[in-house]
Image (cartoon, rainbow, N blue to C red; front, side):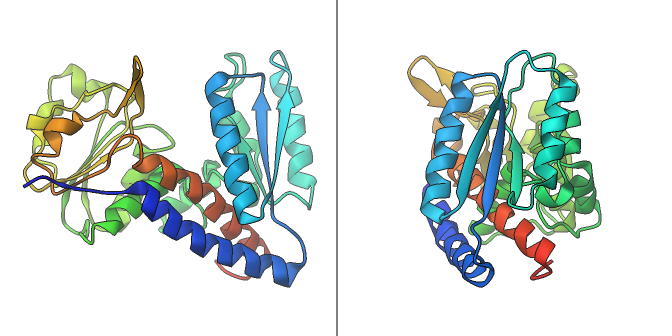
Length: 289
């Protein structure tokens, strides 16, 4: 029997309705709109797509959205000064650093410059650290999206063999901590796993598999354990086709649940950014944790 496809668009729409109600309540009580500022350094075609999508979603939710574009050749110190000013601005609820940044800019330092209570992406070291203590207010959006998609299956990670392929700061690493908080038996694979020829072995024992590498069809469908839950974060362009990191056509024959690409993780990631924004506002106001 073919796997059930996890429809990220439908899940995102349900979350969007809840977030919209939450934001309307916040704004009615506070008589001030929430404001999200995206800091963009230079120009990048892929970034423009994300910025437009963020602006559209913010408008639907009644959030004030502003893109602050800085010169391509701006110095690290000048960008950091811009962030300090945004941190001081009481009208700003949340800040995101649009990536990729130019090569001479250290994006990780910028993430650390954003005030933790304005960190809409959940990437400040203090917010990442709270994942260790299972006490987070916000978490990286893609990692949160993966957890939401897993939850949508109704299958608990408790005691499951969960394998994450990819150990980035925005997906693999924070996701491993979130899954450990759910008592999953968690393995993280990376380039060294692949180079030692052990990737297939790890994937084959995964009851839940999350892949975030950015390499089309890295994971072969035949590697998937029968009945596994598969979350494919990868988005890769092959000509006019968009593919994931998992060979979907073969994996769907073996998995119990699987996300499509596109239409899986992406839509949920986008709404998690806005959910984080509302959570930051409530945290600062003492309305909620």
